[in-house]
Length: 277
Image: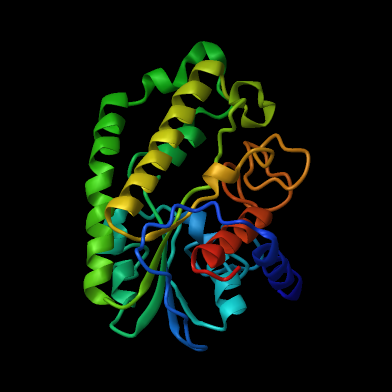
């Protein structure tokens, strides 16, 4: 853990913020030991990043743990593989209560990484990985349902943030965007193991997710820590400092998910968004 925390500290000192800061005032300073609740799906939980904790794929080296250690906060991490906005708001998952139940009036910080499962982004990528180009995998997806889900996502994310604010009016809220899975030259990235047609469809879906994150953060006046916009040179085909895996796991994490380095970067960006430069 010491090495990772040192990396965060160095990153915070060197990194110029690339976040869309939507709050009118800087985030309030957090007292040591303040309650920090981490909400989200597998991109927050950190499956495949040692060491795993419990049935939800949470790692003790995911970005919530790195942030909590760097700021000496009391972490309540309820992120879980496969979670949707419904699992945050009102739908139990894996025998656990809706994630928002972890938030109370004394919660000082909330981070949120959610939305990909609402639009079947990752599951569609999993389904199409490694299929022959002639199979036209994405053409066989229910694209109409996915498109409808994309259109519904801003309202779902908005309802999520409104509910968080109602439970913890004084909390700093940071939306942590997904690191970019499909780089700008995705069609030439062999690590994705997708046909050109499938790559284009899924890359567009990833961009739509990112656009929704940015607009929602602005509309609801919350901070955003955006690894997506800093992804150049860190995608699945990067030679080094890979923030996200392709179909094969290069080092840590699981396929099409952040690596340990990706979680370090997300933690850096959250700290920067909160003014810890």
